Length: 105
Image 1 (tube, rainbow, N blue to C red):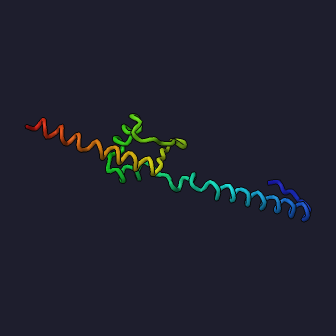
Image 2 (image 1 turned 60 degrees about the horizontal axis):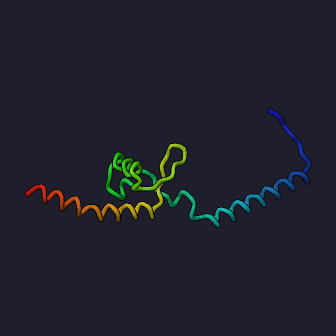
């Protein structure tokens, strides 16, 4: 382990600049709050919301039904995209039911 000694005045200047940097980062985060991942949904959230399996969710991604972002190996979805997919799938639902009943006759 290496020990480095610095003057108190140098340390104070360093801490002052670090605090300025931290305030700037906070200001940027506040300005771009809507882009944080806290408001995004992960696979489990989407599967629960849409009442679908993970495999169906993958099919929706593959077919472009549900837009997503990937960070490392994890998928994230914007809540408004999930709601749009829910509306789209809700509109297609009656078509499926009509086809099923017409084949059953």
